[in-house]
Length: 288
Image (cartoon, one colour):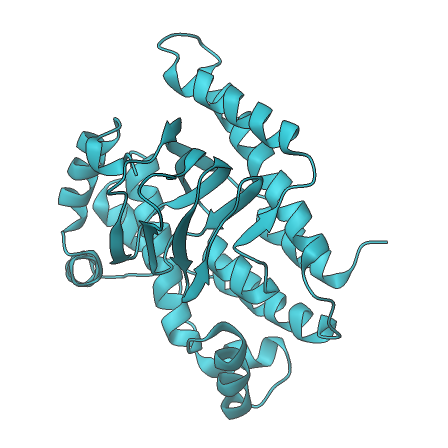
């Protein structure tokens, strides 16, 4: 029987689209180390052998062989070796998506690391993904990449749901799902706290506390982040003009949009598009 939490996750993933950045099987170098950073792409690892340390969203992880790690975009992360002579050999990939896995994992309290019940399925999906990624030709290359990547994501999410501690917060999840869907469907327009609170029949003051307690940010901050995420996705994956992207993400003034985008990401929208195009092919800085 499908639970309320299952329904919430299904709603999040219903229109999922992904774009692979890189996929490889590799052995980490003895100096495999990176301090705290916040990537704009999500990462999935499957550990074949070795040992190491990672942090995702403030959680300290020591993934073991046979375990899988899902590090959503937008969460602070770091990684390092724990024994230079026994570094990880791992399957891994980086990808962009049109949904916020950070919000999904936070809202549904999903683990960032878990032991895989059937490693053969995960390894097979990674092998298909890597083969398709390395392929230079083929009219169906993008479909094969999408299919393998979605297979990996579904393997992880389905097992993560089974391992998540059971709770009685189905009503809370339902209310949050209602609000988050409403926000996503109305990003082009201005939204007030009163308007959002009305969706779940809460007083505005209570609604702000309710929202922040469960998602860690205020409703207005969440809307801002969703607009920036959508803007990045549109700039990366469409031919829309910057003015059209601004309008589609609720900014009625292209100059205000450009200023806000640059403040958030450090580069103007046009520069971001150029940099993304240049960096779309695998570069050395992504090979970690």
